[in-house]
Length: 346
Image (cartoon, rainbow, N blue to C red):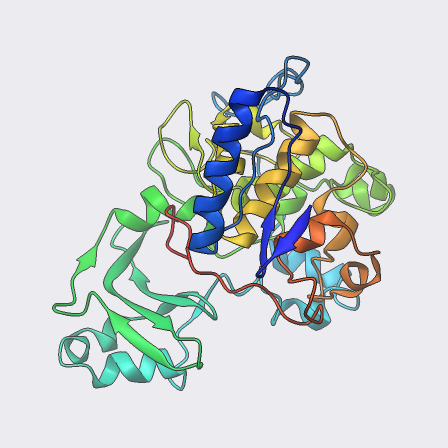
């Protein structure tokens, strides 16, 4: 890979004169627009069948699971110290009256009428959504108004001509990645935000004596395809459930094969307009589940608990780094997201 003006161009071998002209034209168009170009084959003839292994819970009841409070009683030292500020814990959180986005909504002519109803926040540094508990168990209403941060760190409201509540949007579009244990029957979740079940599955009492029984424990040594399915359930944006049509998998339980139900178009990984974060996820997931390249998973670089980037920083530089970083800049700087995910706008 080579970097040109901060954008990354993935080169392919030009095997025919006719192809050379097309590739050159596409490359020029993308470079002029300042966008990355990826032209690798999405599914070579010897590609694996992502749905060929494992099981799913599509036609089964979701298992009972230990709630996070029970888990943290034993794991209060290594996990409990940082869980309150962990990004996964804060995917949905109680409203924070002093947050600039909340103050902005309270001062907005349309927002004044609903600010007292807002009880939960969804999002973080780039986009904030406002929620309230729904009338039915396991449902939330989503406010039409959004708050977006600018490059200078200032917040601005969008879609704020009028503030209206939507009783279906969150559960049909967001709950699969921002709530715990969403049931297909009524799209009701058991808890807002991420409980331990989302990544670790249903714990049994026996795992206290045998940690290898717990998914994603250090002793479990889960196969890369299992690890990738767990992370991809939320971070691989752009697919949909074969059984429900929703943008998240149907009753996925850690340990399942995500791709028995979650359908994706692997050519999405080569879309020039993808933002760096989405491109990085698409390429890594495709490498593992479609191409069988299992040497690197999300956990090779990312430490979930504690928000640590230590593993990431210790890796040697390589082509994958250039998806998110400009080689001419320090690693502390990231390429700016000019295009956000069409799935959730983040």
